[in-house]
Image 1 (tube, rainbow, N blue to C red):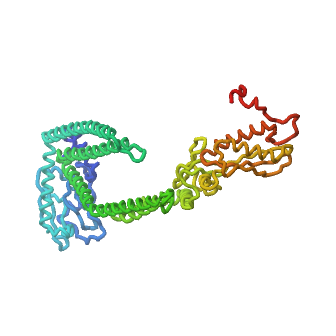
Image 2 (cartoon, rainbow, N blue to C red):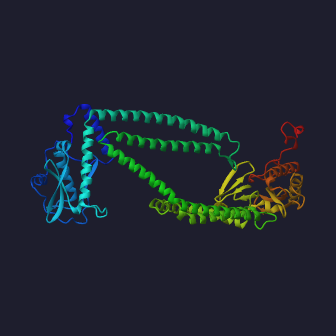
Image 3 (cartoon, rainbow, N blue to C red):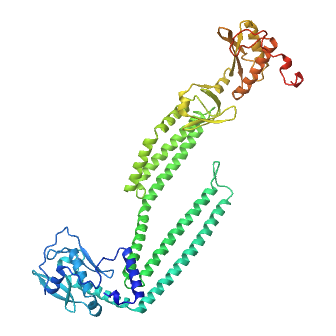
Length: 562
């Protein structure tokens, strides 16, 4: 091997950089410097002895060890000799090659026959100095090559290394390699720069073109910005992989310009091609499974659409088999069940479905669903009870606890209300099930929507007069139906007053709140005209005069403002 101390500084820097690159690729085997005089005890003994030590039978469990010099594999030791493992033999042989590197540069390697405990071996020498031996047990039994054929291959490899060392020591070859590497580097960065500019322009063009599409919507959502962003990112990903491919080509080209790293470039190119070939073969091998999975999903989609249309046709509140909300829920459940079955059937045909990564993701998703879905399952089951019991439907005016309004949407997790004050409220399905509900829309089909107002009047007012005043107020209120007629119920006879409940009926449930507000106003006017005091708040003592509002004070500014 060349001695670095005898080289010019520039050449030593270049070779040092190339050696560092070779270590990064993982192909260089660590070895002592070329001028290292230290030897193992076996090295001196082997060099001095005219023949190899007796060969011992190599244990089957001992791994083979290759002899690598100048990034090139020379021989693979597979047997144990004189209690030296293949790894120790490879290390000793490398030390001897390093010791006689100058002779290996000037002279060719020769071979000779030797007997090792009755076994014929081939020894490799340089100018009479022993390097290593090839034993019959070192041969690969699967290759079918003889010891002579293997020795010819080893000699040819050593000759290639010698020629590469000679070329590497040439200043002209180094300059040529550096020039080619610099030019390749400049071209590489220029191409990357152009690729970046083209990627930005093409991605912007795609995003702009997608945004100019006339219509691309899913329900109320405009998909154009999202599709444009997806196309933009897809082009950037393609550009990234193209840049990575160019980087690999650049690395392989630079390595091939120098004899020392030429094997690394070839190995890098080979591995890159093997990797691409493996991906291509995997893709080709996955085509039948993907075709089967696509066919299953296509059939699943057809069945889901068929079931959707059939159940949708059943969902008619007037002529259908089931209510519209019930049909909607049944349709969603049936379609979801069909898709789940289709995905389960197509899953085994997906590439990588049997890998540990897919299994780990499946276990993780199952664990997440198990831990976090208890409350969700409660809401879903409560939603099923609401939908299939038919107590509440979309568009109906209902009262849940203290909340009343029109049902705008019945979801799988919650029900949405629009209150009379114009507020949208969301009530979980479990809360809907756990509270009493009143469906005013259903009452319209029979008696109408009941509207009640409770007043408390003292015992000094005749109850018959109170009944008449309340009924007259109800008859004067717009929205109160004449049939059935309004009526009054005396709920209680308290200590200081009697409690009266006026019940009227309206045709439109959504008008219940404004009708009740007008009714309360009419009640106050009727009692003020009659001079009867409403005993709310609670009675304490008799006032000097009844607490009523005279008619001339009913309207701000006088009666003319009525």
